[in-house]
Image: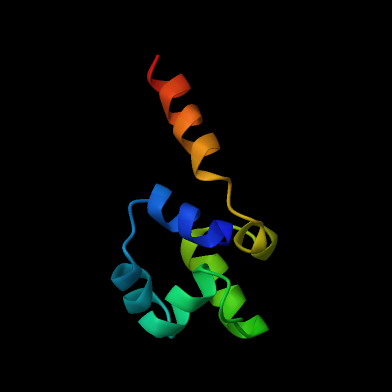
Length: 77
């Protein structure tokens, strides 16, 4: 899975929110976030701009779920 989903969810945006703000279909965006599909350079730029991040950040591997959970626990202490 790519960091794109983590970024989107951290911002409180749903898949549908991003679809409304971009020209990327829900199915394609979902497949991209899980690493099954790729986006064109144009779509990557559009998604990065919509989420306010770089393309490199979108394409970074997602953190393992355990690491995300421990980070959230540390933040709440």
